[in-house]
Image 1 (tube, rainbow, N blue to C red):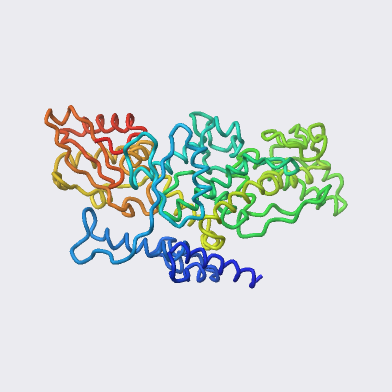
Image 2: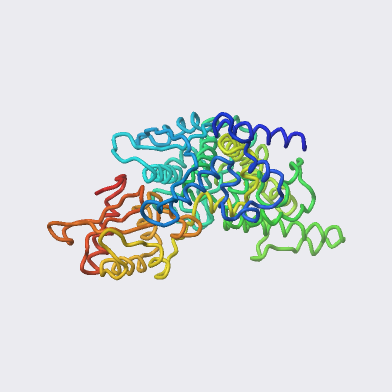
Length: 501
């Protein structure tokens, strides 16, 4: 095992050297983290995970921090970075066929060490803001209900998803939908999961937020191949084990978070089966016969069969005709757990891990917990700010100061926004609806607001934004109400427009 690990580390090192250019040093950061049992945040928290992605990205991060150390505008005299820049590759993708084109693009680009810069075909915008918009648009496309109904990527009946709107919105995040483990290989589905892995890897490598709301359980599977700290259970033998083992904690959490009522029912059946097996082992047949589920029902009252109602997968041959009763409930629970959390999603997550490894290697994801990976990759799903953070990290420039009335109106309007409005504002000004894990303070460049000159009067003009530089260009509105109305209108009508000046 040690030899294999060293071979993998050497392969990653050679790939990293190629990425850095001829004669570049071997990427010691990956080798260091591959041998460590600590998560990266305990080893080097200041690099925010860049250490795990290799030396070239660590150098890039240090150069970016140096050049932006004084906030908005050019670096201070004498602080120009002497560190080398990474090679960039500019590509163009059509919005009308975004998923298909991006799938082909990342398959070709997965092993490239260059920074990917994306433009949209037929549009003039370019730069970091447009590339951030690319990742945001792909995240939305991967959540479309219509696409999910066709390909069945994600659990569609997840808890807290009201089923409304064009996009899936599960409270616990997206989790892979199960497929029949014995069915032929679903080529299109596995190709899409491999694409998700490559997309995750490229966003991590290039430092972009991918606002795809993956559940922490899916992220743990992508990074480590298991739901939690405990290893995956052994394959289930035909007939199951009498009474069954307790459901592992990570599996129980995933069932409750992802499947809600269905998950609670399975856990109740598992507890019922264990109690019944103990009573029978102690010779208490009468008590075992009288045992009921928490709501007072018999197992048979639930009218369950050996098939998953949502996916339609039969757990055993003829399972749709085989009723679940007290005697076979253990076998049913174990087979359902295997379908929902293990064998039924194994091929999808293996494809995702393979795609992720194509871009950042096998070791980097293992250095991160699911929480760390989610924070680095997806950013903060909740956009949090208060007056203090806005005054500190929303910088007035080019015509505005912190004492300017329009600037104060903007701060007051932002404080009144609900979560959907805040995400829309962040999307409008940065190209991505999620902030980095540490909020406004982590934006690079910092978020700023500049005066937009309006010859015909401020009230007649809309604000615009430069997403590449995180600049809101705003007329000097005379009231908070006017500012809120015009800003809301601009955001609602700016879909697909970059740097609408």
